[in-house]
Image (cartoon, rainbow, N blue to C red; front, side):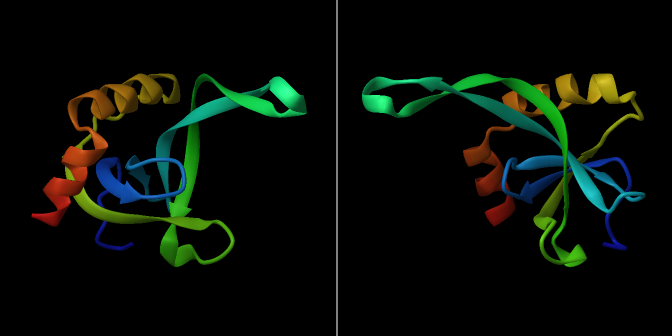
Length: 109
C-alpha cells in the first residue's frame, strides 16, 4: 500500500469494479458501483434491473477480511483532485476509454 500514489487511477481487481482511485487516508479505492433493484418477475422470481451508478469504496486487499477486497495491478494515470460529486463522472468516463478487456490485456503486458 505504501507504493500506491494518492489520487491515482488504478486497474484493480475488486468485487464491484476494475478501475478505482486510490485514497491513502481510507486505504481504499473509490469506484463507480452499479446499483440494481429487484423487480417482480414471472413465477414469483425477481428480475434484477440496472438502476444507476454510485460512488463506493472498496478497501485494499491487505487491510484484511471482511472488507479488504481490492487488489491493484497498474497505475493508469494521476487523477486531478476533484470533489466527490465529480468522481463518478470521471470514473464512468475512464471506463468508456479503458474497457475491462483492454485493462486486462494492458496489465498482462
